[in-house]
Length: 329
Image (cartoon, rainbow, N blue to C red):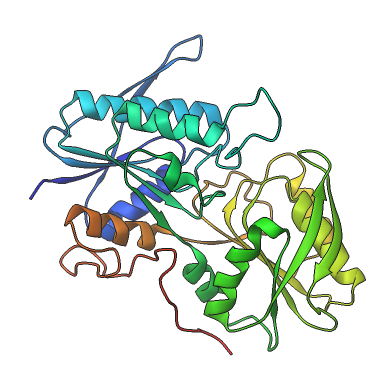
């Protein structure tokens, strides 16, 4: 069997180290030279003939982290790695999955093509913003989900009768996955996006009066969507204690102050994106064991639904679409 190597980019070395720890291997950080004009030149070692997993979320600064990912993939290929997998827990540009006006590019397709051209044999992502990402890639894509891990983190604190709320139509299917695990109903907010940082919540499909609420989404960027949904839910009579769960916590611009002003009971995210603002009252649930389980399965060429027991911790890779047993109430 090929030797397993974990190569970490600079976007989230803590997550890469945690994944390597679950697998019982060392994370190989790359030496990155930075030129005065901003160019990067990463150098990888000990990957010749190996099964390499490059862990690099493309979180802010998105474009810089994408370029670093592409350089790492190319470096591994040129160093004669036997197989190279791009592990991109947060896939930037995924929201640009279609054109909304003439003259636009399809950003997710451009990035997917670039990852393929740079030398990746396979792509692993977690709760991407678009379900069409796999169709846009010419290489195999493994789509994992953080929903079971987040639900486990929430299970002991969710009140009886909690309703899962999607803050827009795009999150409706994700809300159904949460509800399938938690065993509760779903409501959907209809929103209108005025700009990248301004959102209006127009209506709610579902009865939220007097009920505790869990707002879910795949990511929090500026917090505008969560803010609009929270204000509308309280206006419609939902219980004042509102919790929020999301896979990717980007928290750019005024997101931190927005969330503080909402007086939310709890905000839970995963560590797909490295957190720099530790002052914000946000709790983090690690996705490392899920990624490690998926990597162990891919390395041994076994199904992600049946992880091997000989490598590190035996935890099931949470693959989108797999049936789940309700955890609470």
